[in-house]
Length: 386
Image (cartoon, rainbow, N blue to C red; front, top):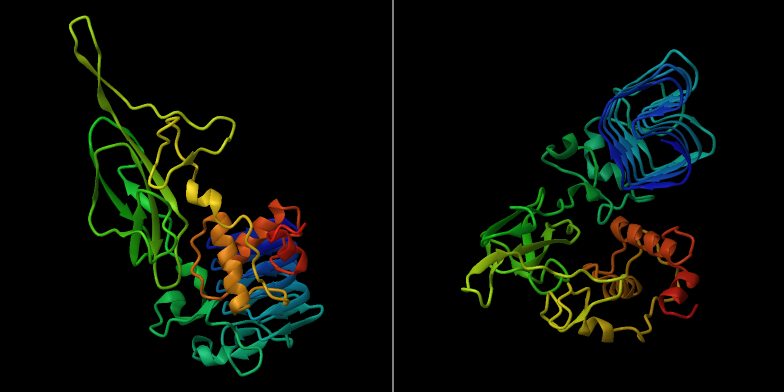
């Protein structure tokens, strides 16, 4: 990658070899990297080489664990930073015979805050980061010194059993369950099917045959394979103690004998044909329907969803909401997203990185600056005032 912009919730695990501007995740980014990581080794024959990124403007809540080799401006996390590195770490070794080589950052043009590197294995330190021992890097208290504490409620986690990430801090989104997978896959079949669901990293799975489960506390708990003997759609979500996967829907069409009148009778096993919506016109159905009893088309919305909160005014408070915000205003924001996007967020009053990504997408789709900050303009747009 060589460009500009904001990179969130991203990772790379492969080994990287290049010349200049080489990074485990990004070579050059004239922007910001948040909540991301790289785990592969990085080898650059030129300048600006880093375990996560070779050259960037800002980096926060990110890490790198691979070894790094380069020429000048070489760091185990960042080769060259223009502005700031915050709440980040690196543990890889750094090898270079050039200038500007750091245990965390090769060259820091502005500053760094509350960011750490492994002093026993990383390269030459030039004041770019805070050195800590291997044991300290696997202790949560190291990253919560009382000032500039890392967020271990919504962003970071640490495994005291030393299994996940070898005991070094990890990003909580890494533990979100994977999107559910169905066997057999969705499609058209000539007889009843027995459907099984799996999801990597999930503790349990919920499903519904009527509407999308609102969250991990609603819908039917999946425990044994499901028998599907008639055409229907299953809406499935995987869950664990960290969060939930996105909703995945699986549509099964079971063919049925169609009687032919006259001429000696008989039957033909023709599949049930479902007419798709035309020109993106919403297909409004009654509660409980999968396909419209009027048009035969698959439902895209239900009557209760057309009545709900179109005139509701949400109380988002007077403070700009951002990553890490908490309280009643955040709960109201989560209600807005559930009401309008059917996300199924848990209304817990905590604004984490997954919700921020949704907000940025919503802002972009509504002509706003997609910065993930819920200020006055975004709030007014959400309440239909502009």
